[in-house]
Amino acid sequence: MGRGRPRGGQRGPRNSRLAREVSEEVEETAENLTRRGRRRRGNDDDTDTDNTPETPAGPVKLSAGGQRKFGNLPADMKDMPATEAVKARGGGQAQVNMIDKEYQNMTVGELANRAAAGDEKAETAMKMVKQASSKAQKYGRGGH
Image 1 (cartoon, rainbow, N blue to C red):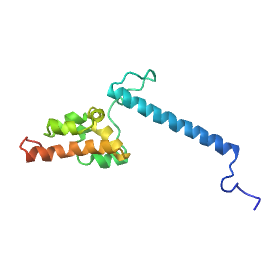
Image 2: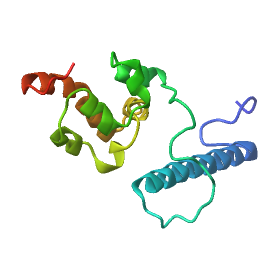
Image 3: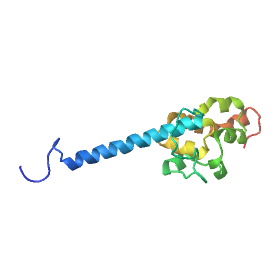
Image 4: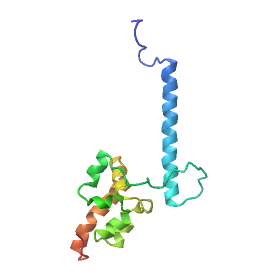
């Protein structure tokens, strides 16, 4: 059994370096996402100047899971902020207020992608957008 690859917990120096590099990359990406979220909420305590825009330039690209979450909403809503989408479908301010403040200005496409990635608050926001039409019909606000 002395031949072949190392067993179990025995790892060579290459594997540990690679693991360290991957770990650093993951931490950096998580930090960037956190910074981006703070900037969107308006906290100016972040002094990093990495010049990442708040929203991507151009239309949002939906992931496969994001397309499932987006469902059969009109295609033009993908790049519309959540608050506008709720109101466009006939929803009221009460439904807009049910969406977390930090998610209200995100586009519906961004919300769909985040919901697909497991973000519960983004999923709630998507539900508010989708249900706005049925609530408008129920309470006579003239939705779709």
